[in-house]
Amino acid sequence: MELSATGEPVAVQEDTQVHVGLHLRPGSLTLIRDGESFEAYHAEVQFAGVNDNPWTAQQVKFSAKGPDGTAVALTVDLLNDSWNGPRPGVPDAVWKVVALAATSAGDVGITYTAPGPA
Image (cartoon, rainbow, N blue to C red):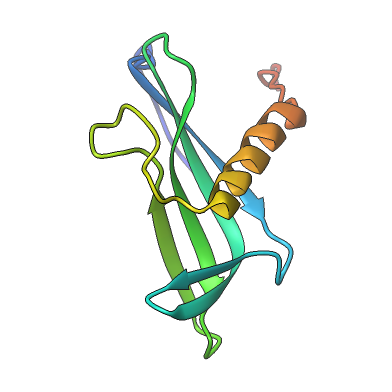
């Protein structure tokens, strides 16, 4: 691969986002939409840090299997329409997924070291 790059990148700190993916144990979470059950097998939780405010969970995207075995994507918005608090009616099990994602993000302890000269 041939690639060149120039510039001095600067991150925009006003709205930094982190996505945390979790593989879910089969059968541990059932999502029900319009009376139809879906077995979730993966969740991606989107956290955002706006300015100097604490990190906030905004959304969870689930990968799930429907009753006929087909894969579907289901998205749960976690913030109310004003974006200033939790959306009413979000099931407790979804908040547990958010808590697992937040915990695993802190527990992983990802570190990064820039590669040295070749």
